[in-house]
Amino acid sequence: MSKLPKVSNKPSIAVQYILDPRKLEAVPGLRDFYGRVKATIKKMGWSVREFGPDIDPDVISANALECAGRYSALLGVTFTGTSARQTAVLGRFPGPVGVWYFPETPWWSMASAGSGIGYLRDEEEDNPALRVSAIWGDPDSRGTKDQLDCFVSAAHTAFAMKREKIGLVGGCYYDVMPASNWHPDTMTNRLGPSYVEIDMSLLGRAFKQVTDAETASLIREFGKKGMRIAGDAKSLKSIKMSARASLALEKLQEKFGLTGIAVNCYGGPDPEGYTGIMGCCGASGCLKGHALGSVVVGCESDVIQTAQQMIFRHLFGVVPCMADPWKIDLETGVLYAGTCGGPAELARSPKRISIEAGTLMNLYKVGVLGVAFPEIEPADAIVARIAGRRLDKMVVATGRFVKSDSTTIPGRLCLQVELDDPEEFLTWGVIGNHYTFMPTNNLDRDLAKLDALCDVMEIEIDRF
Image (cartoon, rainbow, N blue to C red; front, top):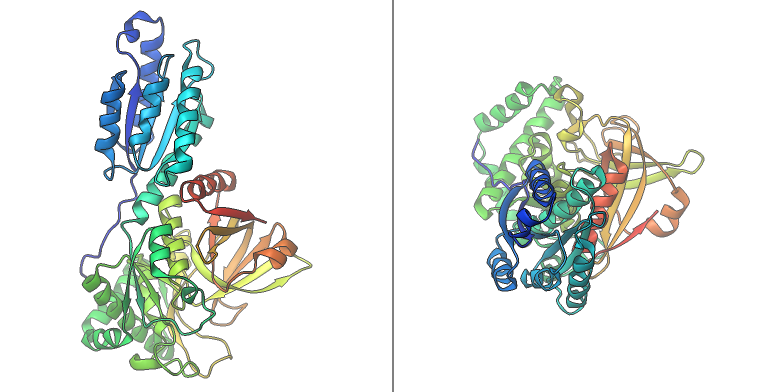
């Protein structure tokens, strides 16, 4: 198998220590405190470029300018008084700027940091590239580390998204589909990824180039990973067809340097037949991306929700599932959502992933395809969707994953989430047919990260 484009998930940030070096010796206890701060930053697991300690505002300004475009964020750490001007010049960095100060220490850290932060917040109003976060607390405090984690994760996500590239394969096919209700420039400017439109004929050409040996090798790889593969002849025929389609998509991924793909699932002009130019449903191409994580794949030409999958990948370290809300049981509050298949990494182990022949229910005459079905364990859940013509809103609902299966909606991956407020979701949250579903074992932490990200990207959250 060829090597596919990779995107680093390790945040790369710059840290400026704002401190007069002479005070490290003159102020009792300060050197030890400074060492604890540096140790905390080192243990966070980021890739860090450190500057200082410095107290010359011209030096700090030059450092901030040097970091532009090279690091996802600039974190200024201010320890003592007489650092307001030095903190203010952090605003030369065109991106997320964090100011970490220490309100419980006797060294006037808070007073000077407050003045610098006030100036930066004024600058933020007129400078769309600048986003300011205040971080405070002892370096050994869990709460402080959580603040640092939220700030850096959000900055890293916004930075990493600018290095993504999404291919829309086959174009859009409904005026009301989410991918039709946006302009590529808006998507790139707001969310970051570049974008290319790829004619379906190129996928058909790539499909013909895939060999039987390549197809068989991919299916063997699923088995080597420990996944369960349906063994009956009819299912295996569908799985082979999907393996072939996903390898064809991989060829386009390599050719155009894509990290994400949104596919016209119809595959051609026959939406009832779902056969298109490949003789199979276009969603067949999702198999390898879901099973092996080789690319982020999006349903039904939905470029925006493909981008949201990428956002969650960078922010939380996992690609969530994209699915359609199908129905809500108002007595239990359970939302049932359906999709063709989902990312294997959502399952606890490969043994809890099955490669099967799915179906598109009885709404269409054909549409059988091979898909990955992960068994998602009970956990808290985030259900989210970026929305708005300017992509400046995100609907976020919370609840709890009950289970996922392929029997509630026969042949489809059905996600069952008990919503915290189903009536509010029905009233205000239903604004599209694709949502991001992510299980989490730390709901409060992940919601805090999502809040921080939306602040950096200037997206308003509506939570239910």
